[in-house]
Each structure stands twice: as structure tokens, then as C-alpha cells.
Image 1 (tube, rainbow, N blue to C red):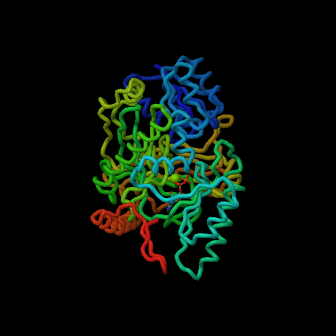
Image 2 (cartoon, rainbow, N blue to C red):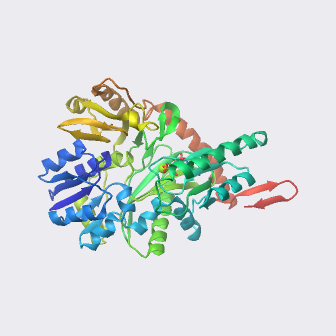
Image 3 (cartoon, protein in one colour):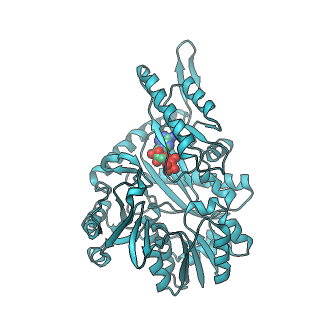
Length: 489
Ligand SMILES: Nc1ncnc2c1ncn2[C@@H]1O[C@H](COP(=O)(O)OP(=O)(O)O)[C@@H](O)[C@H]1O
Ligand SMILES: [Mg+2]
């Protein structure tokens, strides 16, 4: 059996490792932009192979798959899906695990996803406005004083979202200026390289609460949920600093997180199911691949959708894939034959923690984070009980050089999140940049104090959303305007 894996990140290493554990012993092949040492190693050890190429080019990927005569293609990252890799691979008669272009729209266009939620009345929907030109966006910002999340309308690799609270009337003008400035930046900077979507900017009502990610496998008929993971987006300890693609993530023992109840987990699954049904209906396609809800527990709705993924999160996927006990080939075959309903999805119970190490400069000055030789003592890390996932690293003449994003991740599993976090901490000194450039990471991920902070926030929003539920006003926005009285918006 042969499998072609598309992508070159830590997520793809975790997927490749799951394949290497299969009793079917597939040969793993990969097409990568940067040669990820972790993925390359598995390709070699499974008697497969890899080549440097452009994972977002549907023809290149499909040609490689055809020349190898693979049994199926598994797409790791989102951009190849947005570029129609799954469509081209399937067009050539090869099975692809990965959403087709029209389905991946659920991630690619945040505006499309929000419209879909309103059209199909999916719970956890937020009020929003999408604009195609800057004048209309600014006119709206000038007209209404409200707290907003301002976003590029397209998935832009985790860049360009700013959440702006606008609560005090005496600061309204200042807030308006900040919002306008960021709206201009979304048009001129974050969206400038994308011409594949007409909406440019999304203004979304601001909500608050702890965030978590729910991944599911889909075959077009069945949506099978996986354990919850929580990612940490800010660059530095205590959730400060710029937003990143994720600095590390945690998974609790069993299937939920310590601050999310089983009931909330089940409602989240229902929401993701409804969204998958909606996007299938809207596109007239069957969703065969991985989908994930990036969610927030809010006082307005309880489980609320912030964003959808059409693939595994990175680093979140690496929190759960090492625990996957069900054979991944069995899962892929069931997706292909639409028999996922018969699959018993099993994960080991352990809590897991991942911390990402990034060269100084990431995320705002990636050119500074690029080109540093990196040294990782994987043997020492394994001895301590940790594990390395290689991330943005290239192999140049046999040595490893950073690619500008997070360079690698340390993973550990244990009985509790705190214990796993302690193991990761012990492994950190075994990763260094050989030219002396600094690597940074978040020591607080997985700590008891950060968990407590999430738990307290969850308790506050839970109390309010449960009250709303009782009063039958879940998800409703009720305001009071002087002279007009109580209105629902
Ligand atoms: N409506 C919102 N209210 C409050 N915070 C939000 C809202 N939308 C996004 N955020 C915050 O911004 C982060 C990034 O937004 P997201 O839509 O996930 O974009 P991306 O991950 O592509 O940058 C979220 O993880 C969340 O912390
Ligand atoms: Mg996000």
C-alpha cells in the first residue's frame, strides 16, 4: 500500500507517524516545500520517499500521486485544499482524504462560514458584517460604536485579526480611530496577496470566553468527533504579545478539557455536524476529510464558533494523533467507502502538552527568524519522556535550518496536563540554534495557574449562558437605546 502525504509541517509528521503505526504498513510518500526532517525520516523508514515541490499546485500533487500509483492522498494543510488539490486528485480517479475546494470554503472564507451559520440557523453564530470595499467598512465603523473582532475575510494564515473592546463612551473616538486604522491594514496589508475571494473584511461582534478546538473525521455521511484540544495563540506567557499561529496546546485526560463539560462537548459536536451538513448542502459535495471547529465558550451561546478548519490544526493535531489507537488506514478506507459509521474511533486517554519553539523575530519579523542552523538532541528528549515534532525547518546539504516560523515542538503525555508540561520543560534545553540566535517559547502552557484562569473564565460564562438558556434568550442580542427602549438586534 502507498500513501501520498501533502505538506511539510509538524502536523504532517504526526499524520505520517500514524501511518507508520498501521498494520497495513503503507509506504509513506510526501511532497514538501521545505524538507521537514521528521516527515523525511518516516518516508525513508517506511520504504516510501519524498520530493521537494509545491503542495498548493494541484497538477504537481496529482502528477506525483499518479506516477507513484498511490492508494490515496492525504492533504495536511489548508492552502492545498483552497487551491483545489483534492478536486484534481479525485478527478484523476485517486481517492483523496481532504476537503474539495467548495467545502474548504468553510475555512477559506470567514464571511461564507458566517453566512452559512445564519442561513442554516446553526447555534453559536455571531453577528457580522462583510465588506468588499474600504469606504463601506469605514462608514460602518463610524456609524456604530461597538466592540468588534476585525478580520481579513479570508483565512490568512493566522495573521490580521484584531479584537477591539469599545465600551467607554468617552473613548469612542479613540477606539474608532484604532478600528479604522486596522481596517485599512486588513485591506492594504493582510488581504493584499489574495484575489481568490471577493469579500475583503469581516467585522464581527466580540465575545469572550475560553477557546478550544474540536476535530472530526467526515465521510460525507458521518461526523466522528475526536478529543478536545486547546491552543494558545499569543506569543508570550500570560496571553500577551502578538497573535501567532499557535505557541502550544493542551489536551486533558479523556475526551474533554478540564474547563469544558461533557454536555458542552456534545453541543459542540452537534454544531460542527450541522455546519458540515450545511456546507454539503450548499456545495452539493460530500465532505471527505478532517474538519474542526475552533470554538469559544461564551455567555451568549455557550459553545460558539469562532472559525472553522478544513483540516487538522497545527499544533492541535499533534496533541491527539499520537494517541490514535484506531488504524489510520482503516479510517481513510472508511472515509473513501463512506462507512465511517462502522468505525470505532479510539484514542489513548493520556493528557498531552505541546510547546512550540520559535526563533526570535517570529511572528512579526519572520525574515529575522529564518536561516538559523538548529540543533535538536532527540535522543536526550526521548530519554526524558518527550518527543520532537519538526515544524518550519528545511534540510539543506544534510543540515537543518529554520524556515521563519515555529521551528519545532516538544510533545509529552502523562496522567495530567501539569505532569506532561513538566516533562516538556525538562526537554527544552535540548533544542538550540547553533549561531546563538534566541529561541523562545511559552513556559506557562500546561501550568496549573493558566488552567485555573481558563477554568474561572469558563465558570463565569457558564453561569450566564445557562441563565440565558433557562430564560430562552440563548444567542439573542437585546439592547436598550435611550428614547427607544428595549430592542433586539
Ligand atoms: N468574535 C470574536 N470575539 C472575540 N475574540 C475573537 C473573535 N473572533 C476571533 N477572536 C480571537 O482572535 C483569534 C483569531 O481569530 P480567528 O478567527 O480564529 O482567526 P485566525 O486564527 O485565522 O487568525 C481567536 O482565536 C480569538 O482569540
Ligand atoms: Mg483561529
